[in-house]
Image (cartoon, rainbow, N blue to C red; front, side, top):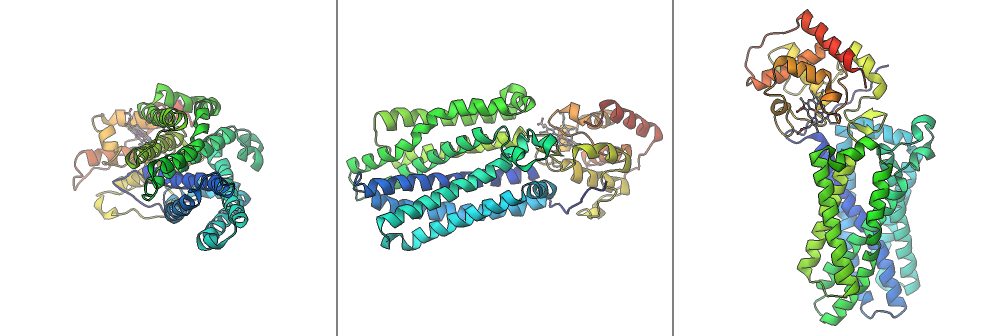
Length: 458
Ligand code: HEC
């Protein structure tokens, strides 16, 4: 039972998890804009064809430029960047995701290709085409974009709620997992919301239109905000199907999670109220600054929501299967016998900075088991968190890691590795002195083993 080892990159002083998270938030926002943008354009193309709006056509061409520039270019770039970073940070997680859902990814990419081809064709030839052809192309673009969400949503929601898949290992029971529908519908509504708010900004740049014409266009775009009324219900549905420990994080269990959740809800509520009262009922005009502010709020809500969605999955990247540090649940017992980095072939960065082999071992254990969520002395740094503890407190709390904070995975190494890690932390706390004693007392190691046994492997 040898685990796969991969070379991991170091993003110090940032936490690795944050690198993926930050990029993911940006990517999700852009991708959802691309989907909602397609729906909005279909709607305006229809308004134009059926002579329901005299400015819809002009708006469409302006809006599409924003969509292409922002979501195609940046969306695709951040998408590639996601792959590029996940393989450096959590290769085993992304590998498992590819492995389990091979054909689903392939299908998703096919839809993405279709989306790009349809979008590009519209961009290049849209002006010359007949209404019918334009409409068909936009529908094709939108359906393809929405289906790429459909496919990827199954894989991402499976990470948090694998459901029946745990027993059946069946692709479809993993794909249509308990949070599949609430999250798909929720994301679709978010897509419409972003598209509609961006439309309000774009309309403000159409300076040759008079105020009533702009207001009319905005009111038409604002119709896409109406489904936001369903968000509270969908949110509750989602909360209802996620694991109960995850639910407790966002309802007070973890200060950070609860705060971000509150932020996301508050931002969505503000947008929703403004949309329902100002735009839909009173049909107000909304100026560029306000529209931009609402869009920024939507970004804030997305950021908060995604942060929470990723955060509540701790200590797993794939629930019940892989811990956040890419160690599988059933490997913990084995690794406590043979060591977690005994077979890790990748050299340490700046290995010569550590005065002893024991400290180098500690640094490797840190890299393998902790570095996805911690740095040594930067963000969420171990020396800050455990700096004031005594040696024995460090040993005990790390041996019982999953009890120290229940969003951490269990320690998955030998007592020698744990002692090496504690020594390494202590060495940094002491200011990285040139000389450092090797500490491997039999008594200490036996005690650590007892603690590990007491707390158990999960
Ligand atoms: C899944 C992410 C994750 C992993 C992996 C992880 N931790 Fe943590 N750890 C956290 C978070 C989040 C906190 C809370 C930080 C805070 O309270 O500000 C934390 C807190 C701690 C604390 C302080 C606990 C306290 O009671 O104040 C220590 C010590 C610690 N971690 C050590 C480790 C060590 C050692 C490893 C590797 C063997 C590790 N952690 C792996 C996420 C993780």
